Image (cartoon, rainbow, N blue to C red; front, side, top):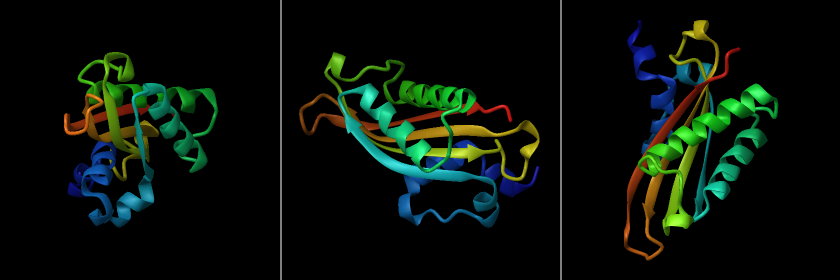
Length: 149
């Protein structure tokens, strides 16, 4: 497998968007093979964070409302939230709040390797902690789900 393929996996692209921010310059192969968006969500409500990601992904046409795509997006979001919450997908009910940047990436698992169909990756990076300013710490989560096309 070519080095560019290993450097541009769908998960790495999702995390680079978040961790490198505006300084990340995707390669031509990356731009050709992946579609991606990023945004921000902050809340004590997991439902509001999920809604922000879903809304952005649909608005930018990364996914449609068709069941297989919606279902894959939901699984990728939920998996990423597990990473952020250290296995718990709960915020306000256990007195936690989160300020997160998110990315949604659609494409093959590896750049230039469309054999396995399309995948979705959702990356989350930011701060989580008690609802008292100054008690937050960094967190990161990554979820990847197969679209099956």
